[in-house]
Amino acid sequence: MRSRISGNRTFERPRFLWYNACMDTATFLKQLASLPGYKGQVVHVEHLTARKARYGQLERPLPAPLQAALKRVGAERLYSHQAQAINAARRGQHLILATGTASGKTLAYNVPVLEAIVADRNARALYLFPTKALAQDQLRSLAALTEGDVRGIRFGTYDGDTPQAARSRLRREVSVLLTNPDMLHVGILPNHNLWAGFFANLRFVVIDEAHVYRGVFGSHVANVLRRLWRVCARYGAAPQIIACSATIANPGEHLHRGGQRPECADVGAHRSRPGHRVLHPVVRGVPRSLHLQQHEVGQPLPEHGAGRGIRDLPFPQLTDHLPDR
Image 1: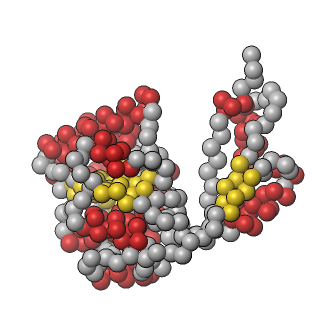
Image 2 (image 1 turned 90 degrees about the vertical axis):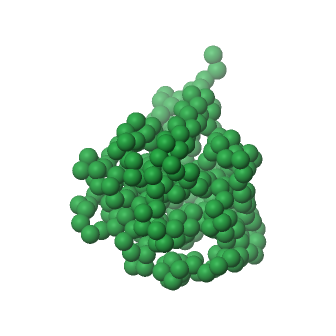
Image 3 (image 1 turned 135 degrees about the vertical axis):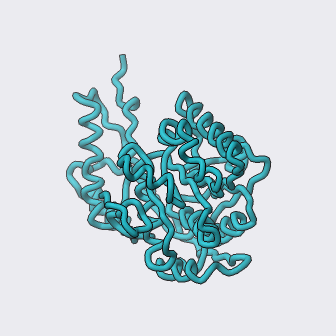
């Protein structure tokens, strides 16, 4: 949902504002297993025992507006990995936060970035996400955190759907720019002279979902990042890198190679609440339509999950269903 730019600090009006939605996964799984189309397909459900949450302390207090913002969203107490990451970022270290899904990684980079911008309104931050949808999702988190307390910070997404009029405003005024590697490659880096002010004041580059990308796509992303570092150097900037991942096995080495930085902090976390893993077997036989069959298998998930505050993302693998030849 787009909005015209007036005095708003955001260049887009978030459709929903949320921070940590409560997900009743046990009820959802029970109802899912009772559906006729899913009879016998749930082959494994694993309950992960919760561990007592571990909280950490910041090395120095946050500015009052940020403290109020964290209290308003229910995050006045930081988990140990969040506090470690924020402390490292405030010391100026490059860091990668490798923790589980829904462990609060977004807060760990939003806090130091917003603190730096509150202290210096010329400071800029570039957020890189692998998809437009994820950028929109994080835009809502950023809007929720800054609602009412941290005022005057402009942020917005820059992707293929961004109107031309909004793009020029983003170049001139945005403090936090949310985009993806493809748009960085085709829309920003080739026109770096138009973004001179942004690059000259670039303090942070946040790389969310810092996975291992293989093949041509992986080479493309690696070269785009290398070009980004060269452009930053041209304008006298050496931005601090904050990366996040829920899956990477060697986070420190990964950031060292991809970020081309000699030293970086590696922050992990402990599991603090229960979770479930559900495995669905492949559909046997020769499908009449691979695309249709995948749609039929996965289609009920969003319908039954959305009304219960559950976010889900199916990952079908079509190659597993190809018939033997």
